[in-house]
Amino acid sequence: MTRNTSQTTRQRAGAKSREKGASLFSVPTQVLQPALSGPFSIYLEQGGKMVLYAAKGEIVTEAHCERLASMGVERLHVRGCERSAYNEYVRENISIFLEDERIPCQVRAELFCEATTAAAREAFDRSLPNPGGAVRFQRIQSLLRDSMSFFIQPEAIREIARLVSESSDLYEHGVGVMVLTTSLLNASGMKGRELLGACSVGALLHDMGKLELPQEIFERHPDTLEDDERRLLHSHPALGVSVCSMLPLPQEALHCILFHHELENGRGYPSQARGDMLPYYARVLALCNVYDGFVRIRPWRKALTPFEAMVRIKGMRGAFDEGLVQLLDKVLVKAGLT
Image (cartoon, rainbow, N blue to C red; front, side, top):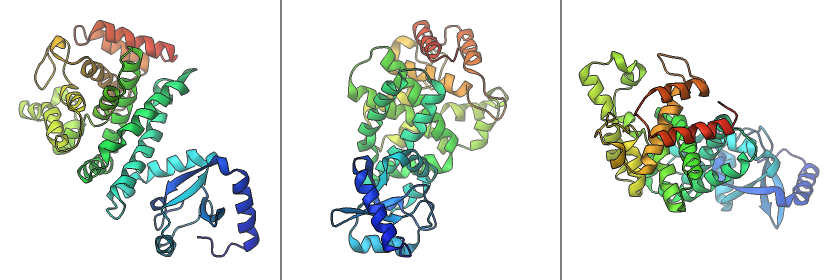
């Protein structure tokens, strides 16, 4: 990419990268997009050597992308010390990658998981910051990687692109609920990698149905809605299942989407099912959904502190299983938040 870079500079860059070869990680070539510049350097493998291809902050052109394509290059390399900058770059531009149908679905799914992992890391550090958190986050990161197979299909990529581009708030909320749900399920001793993976995907996609409804309904305080507006709002879990039923999701993920507003006392929606009728993981998600909603800004109120959110939840007598409320409180106390 740096055609104007001197041969000496290239040689030095190559030597430096060889010295740190173990710290390099590969990325798909498609992360280089015209008119974008990354806060990291890109290296290209040529003849068994790493040479500098894109300097940090350099603007990419169509010619650069065409040159890589003509060379048949599928993977590039970034230094490990710049991984955070790379992750943030992918996260900031994920809509561009997801909506570019020239990029293979496998690559778009990989980039989506990279972006979601970065968002989950931020949500985890904000929600559950405490010693030993790195090990627990690695479990979440591993589940995200496992879930990539769910997002490889074109239909899945299309719906994910809608979620990210039409409502970044819903996407960020989904990530927050996923982190909390997975953390509570781990804390409760739930086993089974496939089940935990299904629940993490269901938590991430739980509000997909809201994309099918007029967005102004969600910008008003629920108490101000007319009856027909409230019925529409209450339909979004079922709409979410309808949207996601075409995706290769396990039944547990669909349960998470359908039941995320049900309550222990049967006063939730859309089915008013009582707690003993609901899967355990869906009851965990419903609690985490309410908590994450409380600690986020809403058009009609400011974000609550973790302590204020737990006070609200404890005041909702009968809405949630007391054991789950105590477990969430324990996790938050251990994280030093309440």
